[in-house]
Length: 328
Image (cartoon, rainbow, N blue to C red; front, side):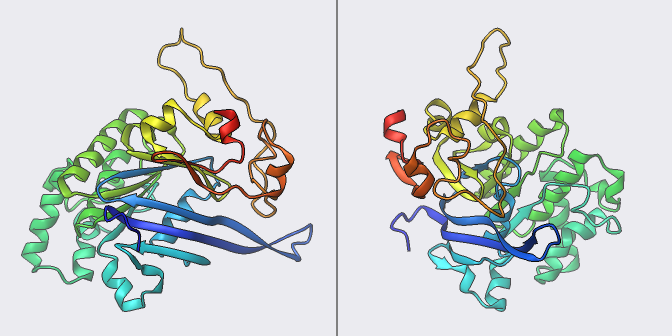
């Protein structure tokens, strides 16, 4: 167990590998290291943002933490206990504390179920309350997410994307969980609706003392809601820091390139754009050593051979790069 009593969840060398086939005739077996020895901590009541390019393993990490998909190796410590060792019964009880808000509000809601059926389903599964009490709880959570109880008997297709995501949030929070994975929770919404949903999630977090793992590829969104931010690249964590530290003083070359791509509100101001050369390497055959070395302008022979470890450079600021001190 970690010494920091404020830590709610911690992953230690968590990995998830998928076995597939490659080659012209798909005869050659291969392994995709979607999540590769990730060690992170999430403190009670905070929002840890998780960012990176599409396909870097963000969503896989979130689902592996929740045991929606089985881990290949490593640990997931929740209040100091490894939930990956839990049997089916104990994990079923734990799931009341662990929930997820999915990316697509259109596909994540069963079109044949009413709003009431969708939100009350977790209560029925865990046999919470009488029928009258469950209805009262559903009406209350629906109002908390900004929808009227008159919508209870309607179906998902009758709502906009923003309203559907509010229904998804209500369903995730009806059991009063402690830890919620927000998997690209606003990426499918119109820009005008995103801020409303983000503000709703922050309000619900404060009201219910929730802890979020907020997964997104949008650095502007992550900056709005997160307390700390972890940057992923090709299944591994490149940098972790407090929000203010990361945006004011990024240390990893990959993080610097990502931040340089954020548009500035003032069109008169110009930021030096860092253009990465080449494409993201295949997860079937990742580079040796530092996975970023094939696109890094500062890579050396050591980078090509030795895997960098995530080490603390400043208080609360960790970087996985061999040349951090030289580039500071």
